Image 1 (cartoon, each protein chain N blue to C red):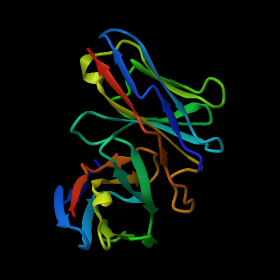
Image 2: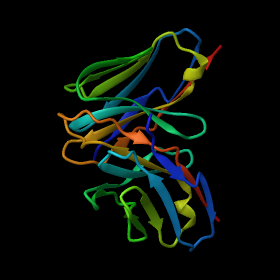
Image 3: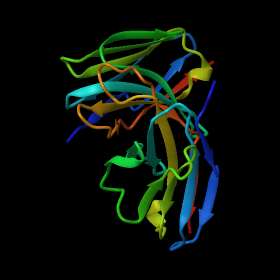
Length: 109
Length: 118
C-alpha cells in the first residue's frame, strides 16, 4: 500500500523566511505532484516532477527517486504563500494519485 | 489560461437523493479524474476516465457512483442515493497525457463542488 507522509503538519514562519516542506513515499512512482490548496478549498498544481529539480519563481521542488523523498522550498516567503501544501504521487502503472495529509503554512507579516 | 470549471460550487441535498456534479475539463485534455476531500481529511482518488471508459477506480467508488462524458465537453459524477458520509468537497481534474515518466503533463483542478447531505 502506498503511503505518503508529509512533514511538518503545520508550519508558522515570519515573512521573508526560507521554507522547506518534506514528502516521503513508500512505492515506486511515475511522478510526484506538489499542490497548493487555498483557504477557500481550490487546488492549484505547482509542480509535477519525476527527477531532479524544478523552479518556478520563488518555489523550488526537488525529488530523490532512490530515497523516495521530495522537498518543496519557498524562498523569501510572503503572507500570500499561506496555504496548505499537498504532496501527491502517481504510483508506477496506474492513475490512482495518492495524497499526503498536507502541510498548513502560515506566514506572519 | 484555460481552466477546469465545476458546477455548482455548493450543493445541498437530502439523504437518499441523487446528485449530479458537473465538470467541464480543459478542451484538449484526454484524462479526467474525480477526487473527494471530506472536511479535515486528505484528498482521495475516486476514479479516472480515459477514452470514454473508467480506467481506474478506488474502493470508495462503489455502485452508488457513476461517471459519464455525455457530450464531449462535460464530465459528470453521479451519486445515485446519497448518504450522510458522502458530504465532502468533490474535485474534478484533467490532464493532457498519462502519468508516465516520459510525458510531463500537469494536472489541472477545478475549484470543487461542496456537497452537503442532510
